[in-house]
Image 1 (cartoon, rainbow, N blue to C red):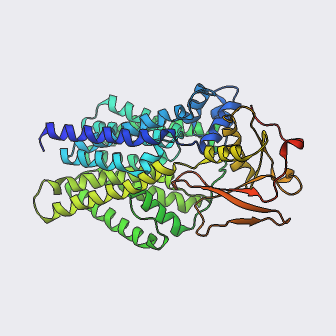
Image 2 (tube, rainbow, N blue to C red):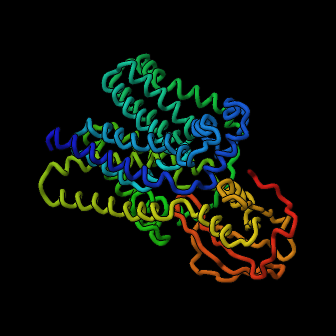
Image 3 (cartoon, helix red, strand yellow):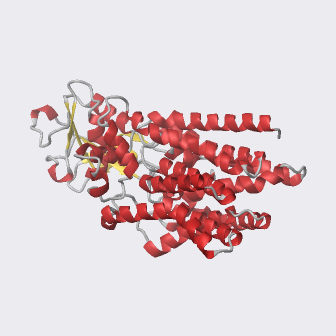
Length: 483
């Protein structure tokens, strides 16, 4: 490709990536975003983000954004703008990392990153994952500039970017481990003097280590993980490769996906190593060694696809770097690569279209339906999970029309006969639709509506109505709704 044609194609891919990330900005806030909003609303000072909020939903820089914006009178999508900017810029950074290997490599990296469903999803969500990815890619671009030239400025940029990555989301540690391994490999081969090796490593990695130690002292040593549904290993693997690379999500494919990934990763790393490209070390540690050791050592109860966002991005960049030279040679191999890239983009497109349709759930629509079908001014609601569903309902109750207000009843405050409405949540839509629901005390509920989500974030909601509705305004409320 000519430089001009490559530049136009790369720019077009970045613009397409921006559009794909802009479209879902307006869909419903889900629980973890609302949780961050509630945390920020309770803070008396921005310092409390680091010293007082000791649980896993607190992504420090993201919570700081919520704190600065306050209770925005505009649509909640304003909280997602930083993630959108970071996610969009990540496409360009991935292309820049690959560009030093060739124009075709840069174009492939831009196409793969721009169209990837997992990256699109978390680039439109007000959490720390998009910022983490942006800072990891920026750090890697600077790292390679430093290892090529030995200049101080790229080393300082790398150190600052990794530090900000830790403040965005702690799974930056996957990238940091890979960066340490790659830089150590390059410096060991290039520098014969032990002191120069040590000085170069300190320039790069001292500040991130100090930031991580500081976070440990003020926050992480008291950290506790809250929320989340444990996944069976087969489902986790299937979702990781399905949503991470645009493949079908089927439990039965978990083992084939894992074997295919190991074969592809091994082939790609061997190819990079033969070329003398040190990227193979960074990708091996970031995408395989660090995540595997983390899971084995920590054995967390909850593991989600979003934890592996950086490994997914670096695998896509490695794929682009390996496939680029094949595209420059005519023959059957080029046709295979073009077909493979096309299938990946198409598969991600199916997941993305579902995301555009269902978003992270239909919570505002569910509450609007209950408001419309409740004869009085009070909308009495119970649910199967007071924190998850109650927090979401109270958030959207602020937008109820005049004369309507939410009366959410915790499970231990249900009236005789049960609340008028009942919300049942699940991680995914159940295989069998339940038209009627009978509770242990004999209350019967009829299914009124179902609301789906696009799987990576959010909950399926089934909204049931009491089969024996009562006049709600005649009873006194036991809860105080938020204004």
